[in-house]
Image (cartoon, rainbow, N blue to C red; front, top):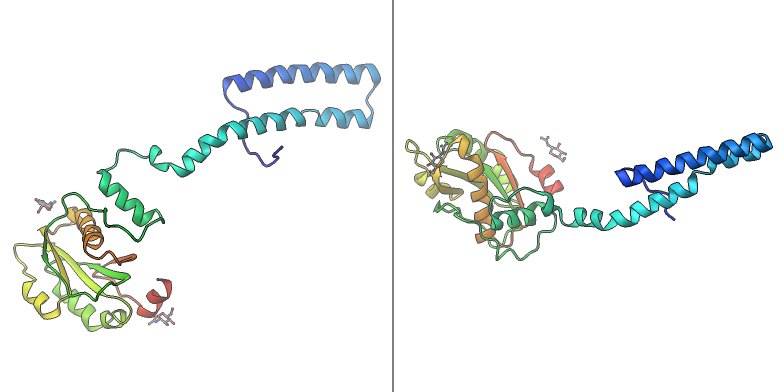
Length: 231
Ligand SMILES: *[C@@H]1O[C@H](CO)[C@@H](O)[C@H](O)[C@H]1NC(C)=O
Ligand SMILES: *[C@@H]1O[C@H](CO)[C@@H](O)[C@H](O)[C@H]1NC(C)=O
């Protein structure tokens, strides 16, 4: 008999049973007290008599709800809403569910935007730091290149990610620094989720060795030592 159950009696059948039990208990309690007088032992008996049926009942609930609980704990997908797409949902589960397997070869996102510019990357990195940036934010990028980026790059590669803009070209800059990943869609605030999906798609498709993706914005300063400690 498990005593640690926190299950409370509920449901109409349960309430009914409990009601009948309460009436019976009251009936017998009164008889006991009236006929034979109130002694401390009888008082204790009356006070504790509800415990055995309660534990029996809680145990019953526990036993019958256990499969349902297990189902909820292990099959949380059943509780979620419609996935964006089957593949995308699987990939997100792999990355965020804490059960990411090394093999993500089957993890292709649907309609990943075309890659326009690729950065130069070391072979088989385990961690990659991605900086979300806009094509026009060259000042921010240069600040990062001149400050903390080389320090972080002692530990893992750092890549700027942007999409396209009619007014700003990044091709020349990328030829010089080889640290820009550009996707073929319009760079805007409302397309930020599209940018994230593209980043995951790119990493899953082309960098299967990556276990961790660190994503930050271009207005962030990173402490390389501290970051390396938490990774
Ligand atoms: C997002 O990108 C698509 C593809 O380039 C573009 O058609 C759309 O206008 C963009 N959305 C916004 C809100 O900028
Ligand atoms: C960076 O982080 C390390 C480790 O946490 C810490 O010792 C150091 O003071 C930090 N540097 C700066 C500039 O805050």
